[in-house]
Amino acid sequence: MSVRPGVRLGVDVGTVRVGVALSDPSGMLATPHATLTRIWPDAETPSDDIAEIVALSTEREALEVIVGLPRSLSGDEGPSAQAARKYAAELARRVAPVGVRLVDERLTSVSAHRALRDSGVAGRRQRAVVDQAAAVLILQAALDEERSSGRPPGEPVRHKRRRPKTKDGPR
Image 1: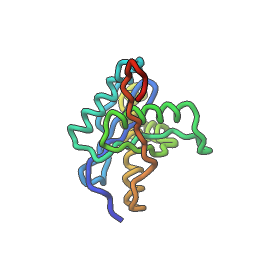
Image 2: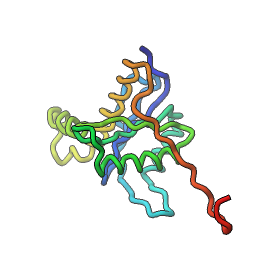
Image 3: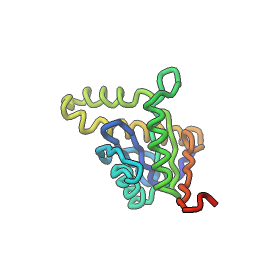
Image 4: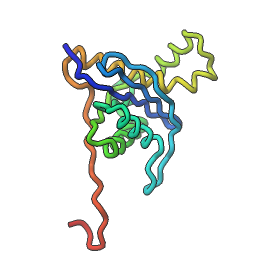
């Protein structure tokens, strides 16, 4: 099967950091890009980490953004999955018309820690790159899934436009 050509961004959403990976233009290989500090926005201020992902998406003319969805081993969704869904929805709203997809990321952080440890990266240095490594694993799994199935991976995130506030209420 073939993969749609175009750069994709992989995102591993954490509570403190966000790992970002990029694919090559052919959509074959994921590589680490950056670890962003997670900024918790208030209702009126957009998050700087999301702004950086939006800017990167524009700069690289991304086909889509793949966000990891941390389900439990049983497939259930807990608080971390709900936080990832909320993050992906805000990202989808701000990066449109570029698509955002959620892809199951069970055990990617564990696998990233193991791979870094096996490659000799010390524990303290792992924190700086483990989120990028997890983003690479998420993105590479998505690319591999598309290549084997011929369909885009995961589930699309639908963004909802915010309605402007008016004195008279919604129209």
